[in-house]
Each structure stands twice: as C-alpha cells, then as structure tokens.
Amino acid sequence: MTTKKILTIGSRRSLLAQTQTNMVRDMLLAAWAELTVEIVFMDTQGDLNRHDPLPAIGGKGLFTAELEAALREGRIDLAVHSLKDLPVEDSPGLTVAAVPKRAGTQDMLISRQAARLEDLPEHTVVGTSSLRRAAQILALRPDLIIKDIRGNVDTRLRKLDDPGYGYTAILLAQAGLHRLGHTTLEHAYPLPHTVMLPAPGQGALAVQSRADDSNTRRYLQALEHSPTRAAVTAERTFLAGLGGGCALPVAALGTVTEGQVELQALVAQPDGRRVIRVSGSAPVESAQDLGRQLAAEALAQGAKELLQL
Image (tube, rainbow, N blue to C red; front, side):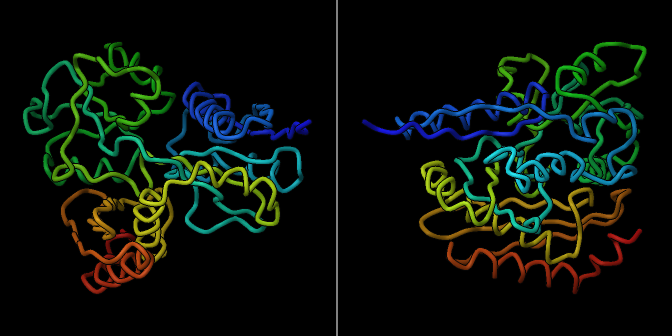
C-alpha cells in the first residue's frame, strides 16, 4: 500500500494568493497520487499595511518575509509567491524549487475613457503603485497624473469606479486579472510591450522550499517549466546586476524560442524623462550571462545614476 505523503503550503490570504496556491496544489495532486496537500494561510506586513506606498514601507519583500520564516521553522513545506514579489537573491536556507509555466506578461489599462494610454484625456489621473509602470507612463505621456493606489485587484477595480477616489484609469497585471476570472472586462485593454515592459518575473509563480528538503524538491520538479525558468532567470539576473530591488523603475521581458532566450529590458528615470533600453539574446543555458551582460550595458549608459534619482 502506498504511504500518503503530506505537504503543507503557506499562502497569503488575498484572493489572488489563494487562487495561485490552489493552482499549485492542483498541479501537485495531478502529478502525485500519493500526495495530500494542506494549505496554511498567513498575514504579511504588505497585506496588513494597505495604505502606504510600497517603496516607502520597504518594497515588495514585505509580502514574503512571514512565509519565508514559516518555511525555515518547518511550519510549512513550501510557499507560493508571485515571482515578481520575490527578492532576487535566495533567502538563506531557501530556494525557488519550481517555476511553473508562465501566464500572460502584459499590463492592462483599465479605463472607461480610452483603450490606449495615448488616447487618455490630458491630465488624466492614473492609479498605480508601481514605479516601473509610472515611469513608462510618464515617458509616453508626461502630462498624465500618477496617483498611488493600494489594495487587491477587486479593491482597485472598485476604486476606479468610485468617483470619490478620482481615478480615470488604473494599470493591473494581465496574469492577476485572468487568474481571478476577469477575462471579459469590456474596459480592460492589454498594453503592447513596446509601450509597457513588465516587471522581471511578471506572470510567473515561484514555488519556494527549504534548500535541504530534497524530498519536497523531488515532488516540486513535476511543476518545473524550463522555458519559463530560463526567461525569468535572464530577467531577474538583469535586475540583480543593477544592484536594485523590486521597487525600482526597472522592466525586463525574456522570451524563449528554439533554445534561445531573448531579453528586452529598460531602466527609467522615475519621472520618465530618460529611459535606457537594452536587448540581446543567448542560448537558454546562458540566461544568467545574458542578464549580467545587459545589466552591464545599462550601467555603462548611466542606469546607476537614474536609479539614484
């Protein structure tokens, strides 16, 4: 008789986090008949403080610290994160044991006024808590007014429709919208990558475990999608090569075709007045080298000075 193995996943309480955790749970159960998967919900500092701008309170690592502590202490066996929220360096004793197949990487313009950033009325108020999005918006439309917005996806959609908040448009990640079932919003428009490059790791999930837990890592290998891993490795290595964290106005998109990874990346001045763009390609096994190479090119063009503004 097969012995049942129990794995415990730690998850944030937000609806999107729960949805993503359930996706990973279902993938594990489909791959391993002997598994029982339990979910433990936790509050993170990023969830508890829904009002202050993320860069002002410590950046996106605020969404991961409690889950990582629970992993180290053995209270959970794995944690599911949006990869773009995870710091680029592995936390001590932990590793990203699996990167499943990526969802959509585009950002979505949500507005009842226009289908393109170019067509928004002058001095429109656009809601985003992302310096990356804000910088790229202002590079295209310096007249637009950026206003911070916090809360989960449904909260942000409600704020857009409530005139009291003053937003004419907001930006949200395509992957999060679609995972929550918002696939038919009539006023949601994908932004082309030529207008808005995504955050490094956007649309991808990271399944984190203890580095020395070989048994859990064996189970998680069934979830690994190597093209996604190569693409996000190039993106996150680019970010790491700049010496920056998740909150900086940095964007990167890796795509894998026929064993080659192509990387487009940018570093922007926060007000969008200057944008440094770099691109290149390499074999997938050299994804890290490609990320480092393009980071060095961006730094040589003055990226460090932009990030310090």
